Length: 186
Image (cartoon, rainbow, N blue to C red; front, side):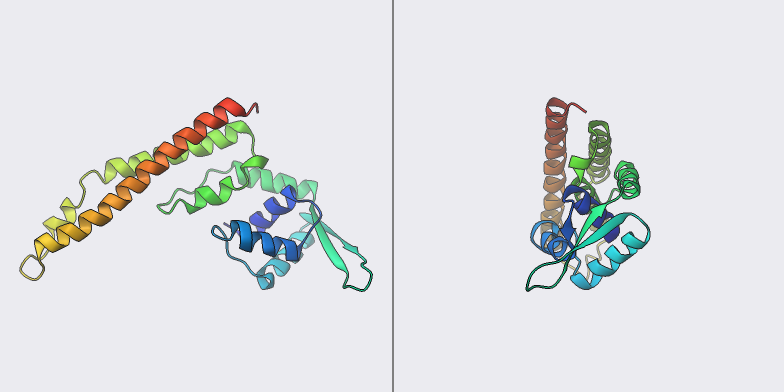
């Protein structure tokens, strides 16, 4: 995920937030999805400000340094909305889906459902395409050099983890979709 979109999303959800608070939020809440330090956050905030996507104001504090807080502008909201509606890049590690869905409270119901449906389709196609198990690896194994039984044991163990992980993801995605359908109005 692009740090700038993450910052736009976080600022939209938490208007009037400081760069320091954004850093803390990324580290303590969404850090497993995105990694950024203050040395990355402040230049990105400056760029967003320069582009007119966020505004900032300074708050004078007694006996403390001035605090700068950021809010998203209408232009920033529009850019964020367009990004949220873009199809999610599917990948094996589920990270792109998770990163965008962190901002699902900012999405309409139909956008969320489209993202979920696309991810389910991708995950189910992965399961179908990997249905052969480790047969391909076994077919190409140099059995004069490597022990077939050992290789099959290890490869099958990893294949099983992959398969079970994808099955759990698909089941969760389908449950998530049902919840969205049942609870969200728009």
